[in-house]
Image (tube, rainbow, N blue to C red; front, side):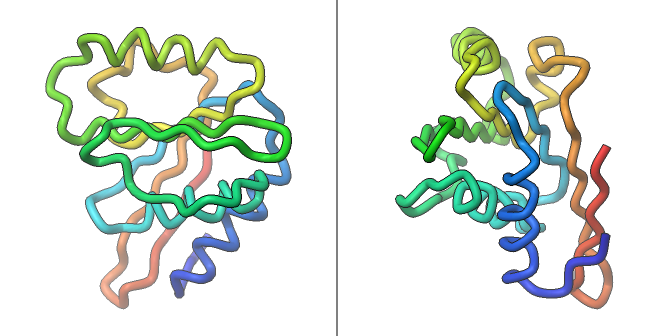
Length: 134
């Protein structure tokens, strides 16, 4: 799928949220600044989260309450070793009422479920984004 504008990435997240039933794990793959958190903003909106969404780059995780589900958003970019975050992630993944989204998950690949959805976002030369869901 080709995304040309930031608003389109948000709308993709909103639309994608309508297909989700917790528990579910989503891994976001892409370079810094490619639109991963923008997608999460749309996902949160689609789940009925009313508070602003910001990147958890420095806090590692943020949790939001939506209409029917909690949204746990992790960003392991600054994490070189899982430590206690591995247990925190396991708890989120086991929660039947939680949608778990992970950025930079390679550090915790052994904790992430094999049946997770992976959304890869690639920046094109024209500043559009190619989005692949598998």
